[in-house]
Image (cartoon, rainbow, N blue to C red):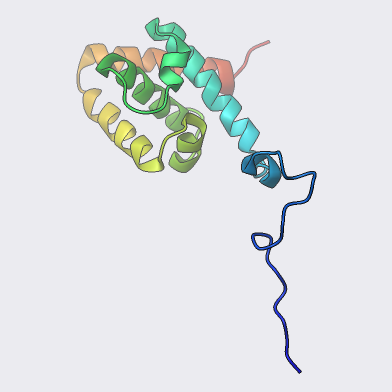
Length: 137
């Protein structure tokens, strides 16, 4: 008697329902993923307004000019510190790797020795805290 292994999902042909949908739509997102993405999008919008940069520039994949990258790094830092998202969550929300978030957080911490830069980051933190952590009605 020969035992045949059950075919995995990858080996089975796609059903008519799944055939035209993207892979991510078929799998679904983990619980809470939409919340993380929504929070990171809101932080990007705040950073765009604060630094007078179109938020689509902050969302653009790949490398950007130093001003846009710095604003994105501050937004990542704020999302991690104020919203208490893990670096992996911030990375998913920003469409970046968690090591990029780690680099951004270390860089912002190092640059906070400059009083002017520290003031800008403190304002960004205060705005995010007011908008997300302690909303006043």
